[in-house]
Amino acid sequence: MSRYLLLLPAPEAEWADLPPEEHEKGHRSHGQFHRDLAAGGHRLIVSNPLEPSAQATSMRPDGQGNAVVTDGPFTESAEQIAGFYFIESDDEPGLRAITEQFAARGEHIEFRKLAE
Image (cartoon, rainbow, N blue to C red; front, top):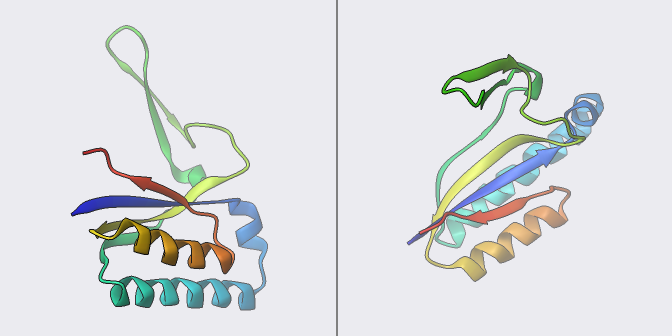
């Protein structure tokens, strides 16, 4: 059985400014994705939204055997990883198909298979 990480990049500021009905539409889409996963025999190990990237802590090597620790995201970008799904499946084509349906409902998804 293979494992997959589905990353959900999104512009955090835009999400915060959406009206409540758009948030509800997104929640319904995620609920449908959960039902589709179960119906397809895919095992959802864990999924979760992440706290805003402004609350992240970045840790980088300083080149001298220590780490430089700073508040905030690792990189500056228009999109941040807003959440993720960690899934186990033995049917990659089926998982891709329902993930594409999820994306078609308005989600940007980065589909990644974990290295064996």
